[in-house]
Amino acid sequence: MYHSAKEGRDAIIYLYGPGSLLGVRALTSQDHALRHNAEAITDVKIITITRKDYLDMIVDHPEFLVDLLHIFIDRLNYTERKLEGFILADALARVSSFLSDCAARFGKNQGKKVILPLPLTHQLISEFVGSFRETVTNALNRLEKDRIIRLERGKVTILDLKKLNKYAQPSKTK
Image 1 (cartoon, rainbow, N blue to C red):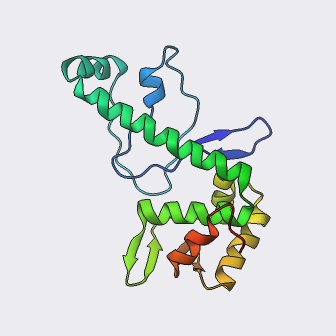
Image 2: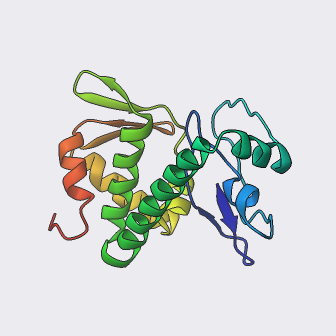
């Protein structure tokens, strides 16, 4: 999910994964407005529901409101962590945090390595962490030099997740 600024720069707001619910704000808000765009970076299957059908389902199954509340809480927590990163962390910590989050949510363990099955370009990462592409390239090169990650044609392999998590902490000296 991303937002396009007037000057043409995109900011990735959130990476969704399997089972994610998109458009929650439009389904539940008074103005029914969509504020962001969505684009798939992998193959997806999408199931749609009208606002009316969704609200009818909530009336028939109020327990779904608890699930919806959990979605909002998870996204609020995620947004707070991301905002904290923008305020307190340098680009290396933001890139490390992004990769660590991707490892936790999407990573495929292969022994001690974690393979990220996403096509992560430097540009895509820069849009997510709010840094220029060149700055992200420098951070990725540092992580690769320190043998924390390996980059191969848009694929990222995490070699040392524990060390990556240390780099992801805004207050740690690296």
